[in-house]
Length: 476
Image (cartoon, rainbow, N blue to C red):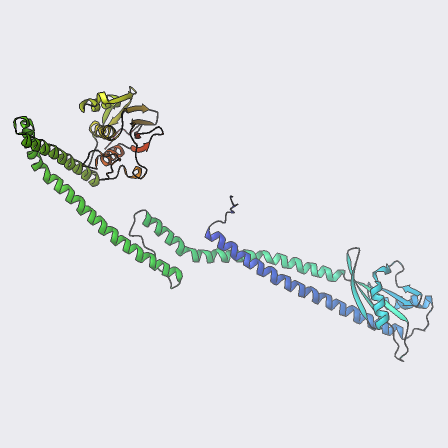
């Protein structure tokens, strides 16, 4: 089951986003708390002011009130109390009589709960209500006289809180606008912090890529004493050890190559003499006793084998030293394949399907080596029939060599072109060299091509030589 992956961006992006989110959450939390406290403080101040003014006005006006009042007296009382309370509406209740300072005022803003609380406790009570989307503070009190006489007169005031709500809205808008510069400042600080933190990481990444590309002298400047500095020191120590080890390995490899090349060249002269003598012995073997004839032929065969091995070693050493060169010329590849098969006596053993007119600039000798290696391996280790198919396209020239043998073991496929690799069922150029396939691949790559090995679905192996269809005109 595939999981949905959300792209998270680079480390810089994640650091900046995390920094901004933390700052934003902190700012929003702090702002919400400050807003709540400020709102409560504004409302508390407004409530205290309204309650104080209301208490004072009721005390002043109630001193001259006759009890029990009639409807007109109660109306004048309400109007007198409201006169000192600004936009507030005053409602007075005495038993079944009710009077208000504004005859059009909606008295439903005085809730039954508030009326009950005032009547039962005899103390001042208040309640915030909303009416048509507008906030109001409703304050109620039961009038008591200084003489200790109780009164059934309850007075309520309905004071609008629109101004306070507007102040709170302005405060909230100011806070919201203040969040934007805070977030921008946090983003700027995050970018600066990310740059400071990620610069050593970026330098370390660059040095690592240089090291992977073969620049073993790459190092990282160590700054400070933090964990990144320790990481840079560790990288430098590792790179230095790697450079030393690689230098030693290269020196050993160079000495080994020089040794092989020197030994191979030194063997050429005695091998030439031995080959000449073995040729004479081989020609006169029929005139020798049976044991001597067998020994002469065996020596001749082994000398030929040793000669091929030395020649292969010399050729490999030239590839390693990069001293090989191509003697390229415009060549008919079909004619070249036929010539290779004819000179080795393989014409009757190999079926060919060669497209005419396939021409390319190649080194005839080196392509001859490649063809001889592939066909020779198929004849020695594969099964009949062996076939060679030559085809061309606008972009590539291919030559396939197939057989009907047992094929290549799966474990041998990755190593077919390794030097000195030999297995009973793997392909090699000869029984004793183990270098023929490696040399064939080097020659193909020298032409800008390659050789691949695989097994056929119907049985047998297939080796494919691929060369560029339009090779460069000036081959070194």
